[in-house]
Length: 223
Image 1 (cartoon, helix red, strand yellow):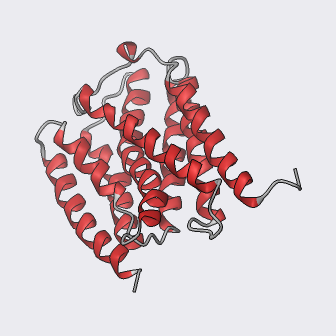
Image 2: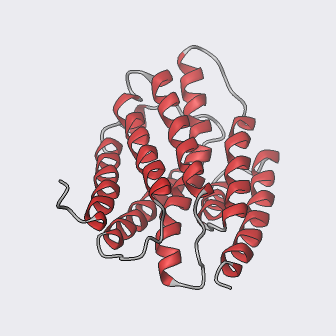
């Protein structure tokens, strides 16, 4: 193992974690899961195709990069998020409360990963290394609220859509700070496919603000 290059180790960590997440995501029978009233339309979940593709592109790039464009800290946090997210897929049908914990932790680690990113959005490398992780963080920040609602329903409780805001707001703030644009894009995508409510309007506003500030920060990082 010591003879392996750092690039190979980093690429393997990212790719292995992604593969485990993809496998776990194919396990649940989603038609059997509880759907809260504030869950986005089914079309919204097609974003996972873009998340998988962008993370796969990032993973492959890691095998060939000489200069560290994503720190080991961010990479390990991303890997932890992907593996915790896979825990949701393995447990959601039988242990909804445990699956909610996995999903919330996955969101937290993804947001922490974004916190340490400093992408240069004037370069292709800056986009490929930040878009997948930040898109994941944005989507998981809202998905964790859905997971919490599913867990609450399993014990006879109903949770309002306000549950979407804590992690959603946190992810948007961190994205604006780091300059990673995928978070507000994921939030806008989810809001577009959701019912028009006060919460979705708040998500629209914070997403647009985060997108504007994050783009400005990401472009300024090249100077």
